[in-house]
Each structure stands twice: as structure tokens, then as C-alpha cells.
Length: 446
Image (cartoon, rainbow, N blue to C red; front, side, top):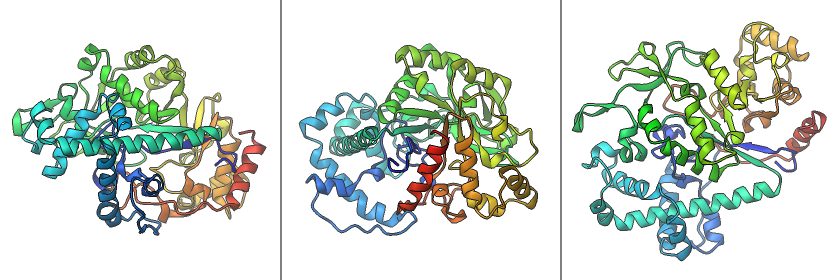
């Protein structure tokens, strides 16, 4: 990135992945994902003995991760858990006690909190699972240590890390188990279910909408508590990254709530979110927070959503793959950008790659694109990159798959599909791309 003249690195959520290895369905809004811990680094610093590394494919190797890497990471966690450095760090993490206990019980039972036999964390459970808790505390310490070193290395090269905060959390995760009162549930005991649940109405990703299944927030209780859980959550995120994208920003104005018994996402309704009150609380708790936030303002955007984003001064998003489906008035076409307070993307993790998008687009869209960029389409990826970098948006971002010119086989995620996503791995960084990206950044003063 430094050689390429790039100064912003956007990452997916850093928390433990959920079903289908999705980083947007994490069992914790605070913990780091042990899969991101470098075994090589643990060997280098002497925590682990040298070992053969089985990596080598361009897709995530689940068998190697679960069967080879996880035991090594746990061993390293146990070895460091009693150190003075680890204990001092643990003492500063208010979220860690509940997560470590939840993780111990989840590994024992093989499922979420509804199978724990306990409605909430207890001291007796902490004593019974002290060894597993200490191991997980060590694992989280190692994640934090390694990530802090990586972030410092990026900062030394003038590179800012833009993180990602999913709006909703997993219904069977540690956050709901520890703070059930902050989410909407109906029923009692084994019959208790999240109701309503989150999703979105029909949009460009799905003509029938999406039923995500996450619990929705009991916003009045958050408000009564001064949004304490949210301020702690955002504080934790901003320990890990320099700036933070809030996913599904429009859900903070109103979110699509679907009755739990309904399988059809179209049968939901908009329910009010906290609006400005949440952001006022975040800024009051840590002045300067708003200056570090980006709003993912995609989807069914109303004037109220626009007004909130603009009143807070938050950058919004423009996605170029969506820009060529109608006519010259589309707001994502660069000549229609109003002002510079935008982050423009060739595509996001939910889109096809730029090459895959162009190859699968119909002739009408392809022709509109070729006319707009003034090129014959033989190098559509580079043309799309150029449009992003040449725009007036304050920040331009491209997925690494687009920087490398990869096709649909490298797509990160297909929204609404539970299998086959989140598995692409970056194996090489070809040096020839450095000069190409640097030339764009120099020409357009990025």
C-alpha cells in the first residue's frame, strides 16, 4: 500500500465470524477473531515452537483452520494467560469476562446461549470454567497485541485503517446473553425468541427483501441507560481502527422489523431508531468520535436519513457498480456527486467484482458504461477504478479483487446466500499493480 501511494485500508469486521463464516453475524461485538492471529508471529516471538504451515490455496481452508490452527492458537493463549502483561490487559477490558465465559460454554455445548441452561453469566459458572476462560483471555490478548503492532506499522507508513461496525448483533451471541434487556424478545424460558427480527425490504440485492434474523434493539432501554452499551462498543472499535464505517446506517433512523413468525421479509414494517440521540451520546462520551465515522447510507434512503447524515457531517457512500442501470441522473454517477463528503467505491464486499459485474451486465448497461467512460470496455476494471479516483469524493476505495483485476470467482459475498461466501484469500500482491495504482493517485492528487 505504501509503495502504491494508498492511504486508507478498509477491513471487514474483525470479530469472530458467525454461520457461513460471515463477519456480519458475529457472536461478539467486542472480541477479536482468533482466525486472524498469525501463527508465524507466535513462532517468531517464541510462544510456539516452529511448525509446518499448510496454507497455499486461494480459498479459505476450513479444515486447516479448525483442525490445525485453532489448537495452536489455544495453546499459545494458555501459555500467555498468566503473564503480567496479559493480566494487566485483561483488567482493562470490561467486555471480556462475559465473552470468555460465553465462549467456554459455547465450546462445551456446541451451540448458543439458549442451550447453556443459564439465562445470564454467574460467578459459579466463572469458577467452573476458569481454565477455559483464562485460555480465551490469553487468545484475546494475543489478538490485541498482534493487531496493535499491525496498526502501528500501517500508521508509520501514513495508512489509516477504516473498520466496519455491523448495526445488528447475533441473536445467540454473547452480547444478547449478557444484556438481554437491551433487545426485543417475547416468551419465557425455552420459548423465548427474538421478536421482531431485523431485515430489509426489497432492494437491488433482493426483490423479496432479506430476513436477517438478528434481534432488534429495545431503543428506549438504551436511551434510559445513556446508550452505555453503544458507547462502549464504539470505543472498543475505535481502539482497533482509525475510522469506522457504520453498516446499515439508515437503520438508526428506522429499521425494518419483521414479525418472528413471518418468513417473508416483505411483511415487515419500519420502526423508529434512536436517531441523533445516539450520536450525541457517542460524541459526549468521547469527543471527536463523529469525525471518525463513515455512514453506509445504501438501500431505501429517506429524507430523514439524509438529514441525519448531513447534520452530523458524516461522509456517505457511492457505489459505481450501481450507477449505470438507469440514466444520466443516477446519484451514483460521478458527475452527480454533490460536494466532496463521500467515499466512492468501485464495489463493496456484497457486490460482484468489477470484472464479474461488467461481464454479467446486460448490453444496455455495458453500452451506457462504455459511453460514460469513453472506452471500449476491453479493460473495464481499470476504467471503473479511474472513475472512482477521478471523482470529487474525498476518499476512493476499491476491493483488492478489483485492484488485481479478478473475476467472479474471487467474489467475497453474495447477499442472502449462506454457503460459498467469505472464503476468498489474498495470496499475492503483484508489484506491477503498485505503479498502476500510484499513477492514479498522483494524477488525481489522492
